[in-house]
Amino acid sequence: MSTTYEPARPRVPYELIPTNVPGAHVSPALPDDFDPDTASSAALIKHGLLWRRPAADGNPAHRAVWEHAFSRRWRAEDRLIPRLEPQEGRTHILRHEAERAARPGISPPPGRAALRVHG
Image 1 (tube, helix red, strand yellow):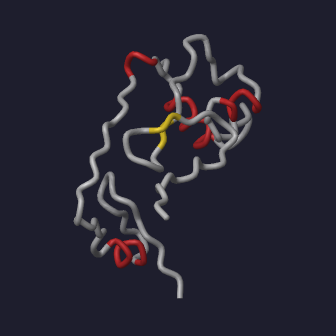
Image 2 (cartoon, helix red, strand yellow; image 1 turned 30 degrees about the horizontal axis):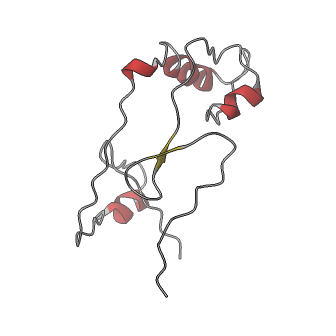
């Protein structure tokens, strides 16, 4: 019996668009008239923004991050959707990331994930 592998779509409360790699998805662009500062919590979730909007009198650092992230419109025409190309037979290993993450005060290089090792 022959079966075809088709990965399941992740269960998330917002729309996802499949990419050219099975199992990898992107979220659609925000509508042009979408304003995250006035949108309801439900509207934020519907559009894939799972951030809790900080209160005006809340943590100033949280407010600064929010304002920086939404300081400009997220226009659909400015959006880049990567074309993912898996490399057959190649395994990508983040060497030494666990050791870096374990040392206090040392951040991973920009664009690299930190791995937390428990045990």
